[in-house]
Image 1 (cartoon, rainbow over the protein chains, first blue to last red):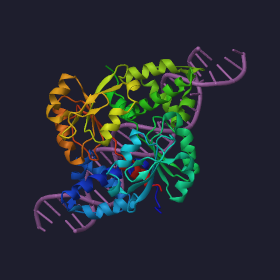
Image 2: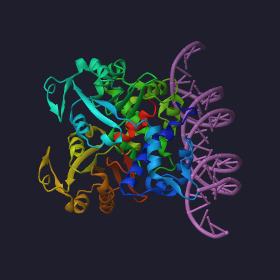
Image 3: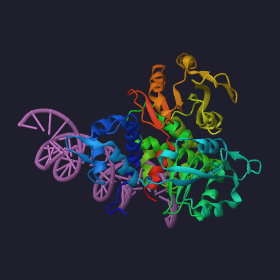
Length: 205
Length: 205
DNA sequence: TAGATTGTTAATCGATTAACAATC
DNA sequence: TAGATTGTTAATCGATTAACAATC
């Protein structure tokens, strides 16, 4: 699609910009500047202009950026001008919280299916979703055309389940298990581990 | 404490190394090399050696690193050779999941108190903890000497609650609210927003 | 001793910032 | 027109990698 390769570090900032812009829009603001947006998200104005200019000239000299238009552009760039179906693997506390979380729907994601390997949980419901057995996972994922999974199993199970997910055609994994996982090159992974984030802060305390 | 200023990007990798080393230790492994550790966490061997050498020579030529000793050293560096008391602000689904999460205790953190502003929740229990009113938050935090908070309130309440936390002496905030928050320079913040992480991946899909 | 692996230096690579012409 | 702000270039800054002497 895109001709130029964009550094991942820039890609990582775009969702932050998008989040701030949507908040401004909710406040009925119509335009913003690189300076204002920068103060909002804690990034220099120069960097924001440089980041955005990688994808085209979205702003107007003297005026700044139209919030609505920039939101639309960023959503297209990030491929969230569509809704992605998502699977939650593991129906423990985190899996529950994610499945019930209201914050996904207007940001491009909908949780469509939940799996667990615990017979006591299989068949139970979280909201509208019935917890499925991991035995049927591969088929169910392919059938539902799901390519994004949130992994909330234990550290010891994470790699095995990851391999199953990759075999089932998953292309993106948000990993909540407190362990690094190995995936083929065509699969992207992001990590969420609160202890790791906390430890990064206690260094400074 | 430390004489040399360590770049934050290096600090951010240390908890990843620590997590991997502990996993190796659990598997009864006694030594590792920068190469092996690097393959484990997806970082080059040269970078791991360089990162660790910022803090001293922990390894032995020809042999590698003693896992036990390196774990001890990293825990000291990250200040998790002690247990930090932590507050959870917001007793919704995420607050619940965090409070019940088993993964903190052996990584340097213990959740000691939970707050919410919803009268229907105040007084109810999560595990052993009784949900407290946010009205009493500042006093309770100071009294319990808590300097780390996990923020799980709504985006619209996040900044106001953040200001209260800063006033109450909080020095580190793990922010689950999907919004950027502003804090004074002496306060550190880390963000966990699953939508943001997901959007960073959909760019590549 | 031979093999392995560290710690460190120098070279490379990439990201951020400063500055300003262009222009709304 | 005057003021504001973009997009972009060049300069600076910082991070990563490659390579290897030191040494266990």
